[in-house]
Amino acid sequence: MSDLTYNVIVGLEIHVQLNTRTKMFCGCALSFGEEANSRVCPVCLGLPGALPVMNRQAVEHAMLAAMALNCRVAEFTKWDRKSYYYPDLPKNYQISQYDLPLGSNGAIEIPLEDGKTKNIRIRRVHLEEDAGKNLHTAGSFSQVDLNRAGTPLMEIVTEPDLNSPEQVRALAVELQRIVRYLGISEADMQKGHMRFEPNVNLVIDKAGQQFKTPIAEVKNLNSFRALERSVAYEIRRQLDDFLETGRTMQMGNKSTRGWNDVEEVTVLQREKEEAHDPDLVPVVATSQWLDKIRSRLCELPVQRQVRYVQAYGLSDYDAGVLTTDRSTADFFEQAVRAGGDPKRVCNLLTQVGLKLANDRGRDLPSLGLEPNAVAILAGMIDQGAIGASAGNTILQAMVETGKTPDVLAQERNLLQKSDAGELEGIVDQVLAENAAAVADVTAGGKKSQKARGFLLGQVMQKTKGQANPKVVTEILNRRLG
Ligand SMILES: [Zn+2]
Image 1 (tube, rainbow, N blue to C red):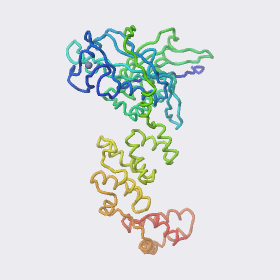
Image 2 (image 1 turned 90 degrees about the horizontal axis):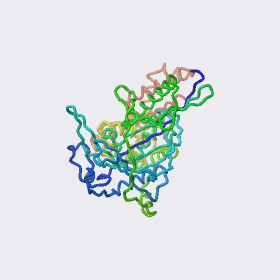
Image 3 (image 1 turned 180 degrees about the vertical axis):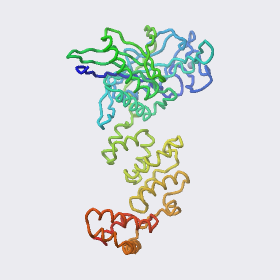
Image 4 (image 1 turned 45 degrees about the vertical axis):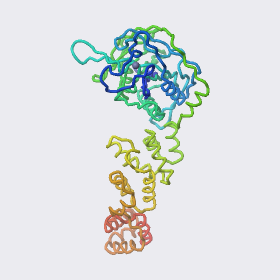
């Protein structure tokens, strides 16, 4: 064992359901949870004579994604029929794109755990349509719901540049952020809007000789957790298989596996037979059309995250939290533009705002907070009018009552005493009452810091926590030297 090392090689295929109003080639509305087979028509049922008409919005969404992923966007693409005979596919073919995808040769950066980033190449971005759903709910037969048949799916395929389960997950999370930022998919995992298929194998170095294990493709994973765990499982399984059988990659011996979420293992699957039959109207993208789509590109989450660290001095972690979704990042920036100190605003939003939003199952902007009011609150903390923890209390009260921060600070008696004259009297009183602590301070040494803290605490107690600790510390320093 000691002379064996290995590298993990993973390429990822990601299916993203686009949030168009209608299906890919017909006018049926997209649905979730509607009555079975209530969103179907001759086109998506594949009845004879039905003519598919391309959904322009779906093409534009996919092109926008291709641009965001730094792909070359094709000026000419076409559709291909992927033929297979399967109960959830009444047409006996799925419309997809083979040799001329919408986007190719792209790349994105993913964040790594050590704070660095890694470049992952994107092989292609293409469009296809989803199949229906087989239901196994009753008896010894299956039923088919074709509401999903024809739903526009964007498929993103990476090069095999991912080298650990964590990197695979990071890429998936990053893609979710990107499609949400672009507004082209809700990317809601629970509704199956994103599905993952990792291709995993190992390059093993044993006693100076190199071996490649056969590639396994794990189908249809619909959570980040299942994705990460299935890749980790495949690594162990392939290593064990190699040690036991010495099996290595031969031409075309790629296998397809499914994920059992309960037992957390992958199991071998039979593949669908397919054949090609291209004869659909191609897509010709003029440069004007592409420019129009390109104008919809926005600053992407990773770029924003880096900007927050560089321009505002936020930690990489905080910047990541704020940029998780676009609406939170927009809100943060509005508050900063309204004059709020970025760090203060960040603390208010990450410590209180996002928690409240999360508890209520909403996003930050729909809590009813005004960015301007958050900026004012941040300013009150900066000026010492209130303490930082009072700021958090007030932000929560703003959400609950809709009142302004200054009114709430008054009402709830949270304004700090910063008047030096008044505070000096209290400090003197505390010094007179605590001669022992004062002696400790003047004696210097280890006890001195502790005694200072104690005296500050006494002043805070006397003022019921309303003294501005900064002002009190200044007075103490003046009095005690
Ligand atoms: Zn239809």
